[in-house]
Amino acid sequence: MCQQFFNQLAVSAESFNGKLKSNMDRYISQFNSYSIWLWHIVMIQTGIRPVKHAPGLLHQFDFHRCMLWVSDKEERHAQSDGRLIPLSKFLITAIQNYIIYIKQFAAIYNSLYPAARYPINDILQSEQPLIQIYQRNPKGFARITPSRVRYQLQDFFSHQDNWLRHQLRSMLTARA
Image 1 (cartoon, rainbow, N blue to C red):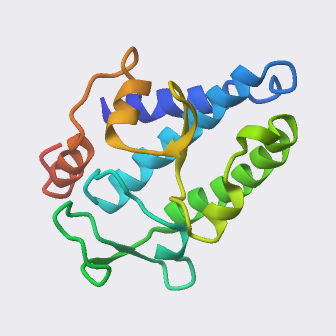
Image 2 (cartoon, rainbow, N blue to C red; image 1 turned 180 degrees about the vertical axis):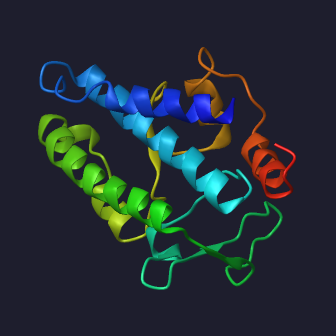
């Protein structure tokens, strides 16, 4: 079931390739699909909790050392509370490709909608979370959260926020 879910997300993100110039709604749909796919990949690859700010800001990723600094317990409020999590080469490549994509996305989107810009500079300067999602009510870009993911996937897949963490634990203990 997990593999089918990720295959469906990938197809959703890729299905808009080559069809983007004619319809901005399709472009936004691809953006959201890609963001949701990456969010799920980060969750299952790292095992972090799906809290409202996960996976965090770009500066929390150290691609050279293959590490992610994360503070994923809601009750933790201090910046120093957290832990380092190793990043796989696959995840690093996925995030780096996403960064390339969002730069391209911003160049197109921001030129067409200068009043409601995608915050690419804030993301690259770690002033806003790396993974954003476009929401329609209210319209605009917002950090990805478990509730926003659930809303986007409501017709596609019903799940609990922590299902990837439990799936990872099952896989690691060979009970999947």
